[in-house]
Image 1 (cartoon, rainbow, N blue to C red):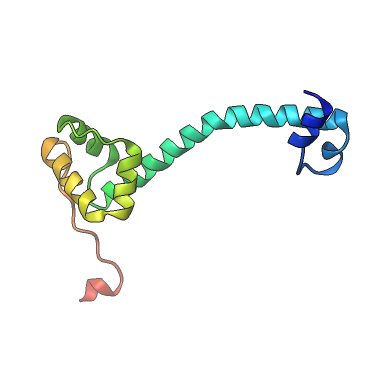
Image 2 (tube, rainbow, N blue to C red; image 1 turned 120 degrees about the horizontal axis):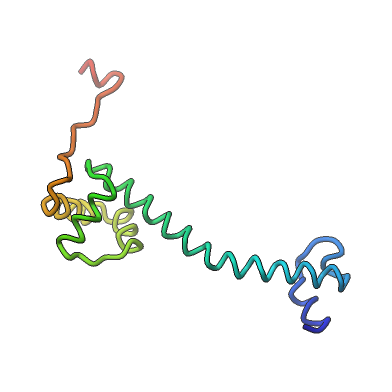
Length: 124
C-alpha cells in the first residue's frame, strides 16, 4: 500500500497513528487483522444471541431449548435460528403454536408448570 492509501485507511485514528506514516501503517495493518477476525466472530455472536432469544421464549412455555429444537426436527419443521428468534420476539402466538407442535412431537418435553406466586399474590 502506498502512503495515500494508508492515510485514507487511518482516518479517524488518534494521535500520531493518523499522520505519521510508520505508526499509521502498523495500526492499519493491525486494524485489518482485527476486521478479518471479527467478521468471523460476528457470525458466532449472532448465532449465540439467536439461541438465547429462542431459549427465553421457550422457557416461558415450560420447554427448554434443546427439547424444543429436537421436537421441531422430529416434525421436520426447517426454520433456522434467526427466523425462530424473530418469531419469538415479534409474534408470540405463532411461537406458542410452534412450541405446542414441538411439545407434541417429542415426549421428553415436560408439561408447563404453573408459575409460582410470590408476594401479595399468595394471599389472594
